[in-house]
Image (cartoon, rainbow, N blue to C red; front, side, top):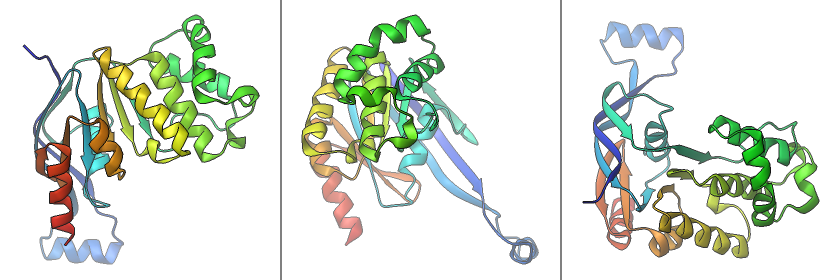
Length: 239
C-alpha cells in the first residue's frame, strides 16, 4: 500500500484585505467581507515517493498552498497534515542570514531542521561540492548572486535529505548546467523514498520530472493530472 505523505482536507485560508480607514468603513457599512480568500475547498493527497508540480497564474494561490503544506500558514478551516520532516526552499536565501557566511548559514539551516553542528560539518564537503561555491562558502551571503544563493539552498536541503522537500521557484535561477544538475539531484532524492512538491513556471522541467501536476486557479484546485494534461488546461484558462 502506498503511504500518504501529504494530505489536505477541506482547507480554506483567508487573509485580511489591505484597506485604508475610509474603504474599511464603506465595506463595513455595505456588509462586505474584509477578508480575501486565498485558498478554498482544497482537497489533496500526495504519496510518498512522488514528485508533484504546482502551476497557476500569478496570484492564483500556488505559493500559498505550498506554505500551508509546510505548516507556515495554518488553515482557517479544514486540516493539513504531513508525514515526515519538511524542508521548504522558497525565494532566494529565505531563512538565511545575509551577514553570515555560506558555511555558517548551512550549519544554521541544518540546526533549524534539527541537525546539530557536528552533523552539518560532516556534510559541508558535499554541500560545497554540489553548490560549486568554492572559496565563496566562507564569504557573507550578501556578496552572493541570486544563482549562488539558490545553489546553496538546494545544496543544503539535498544534503540533509528531508522526507518532504518543497521548492518554490528556486530552480528557475541558475545556468542550464546547474538546472540539469538540480534535476538529477531531486530525482535521486525521490529514489530514496522522499517526496518533492515544486512550484514552477518551467513547464519543461515539470514535464520531465513530475508524476502529477496540480493546476491552481483563483485559490481552488482546477485539476490534478499528468503534466501534459495539466499544462494544456493551464493554457486553455489563459486563452
